[in-house]
Image 1 (cartoon, rainbow, N blue to C red):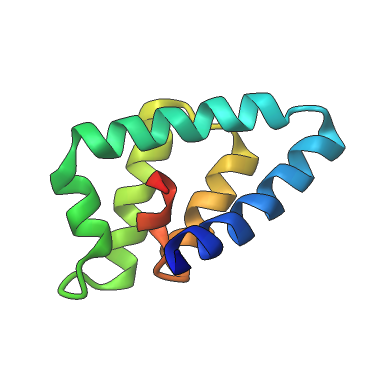
Image 2 (image 1 turned 120 degrees about the horizontal axis):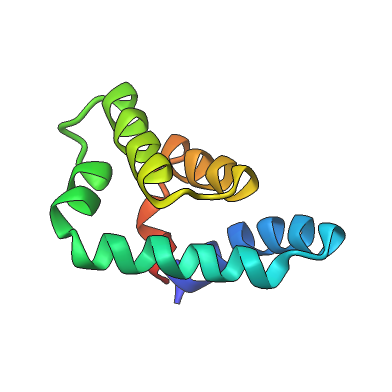
Length: 93
């Protein structure tokens, strides 16, 4: 329940920007792609969630994901924020 509430708060921020720009559906599709990638690559998600890896390494990993998937810059900022705030696991919520 708490996981869902936290995920919704972050998602509302991104979708507010998407609505403003008329691109919220596009943002939603990009988040689905990222979520599908992380589901299919549990080792990547595990590294992003792990307290063992330093924040700068996690940011490098997320940058590679962003680059590899060709993620839009607004969605990329959102992903960086999730990594910075240690909330990347909510991408699948």
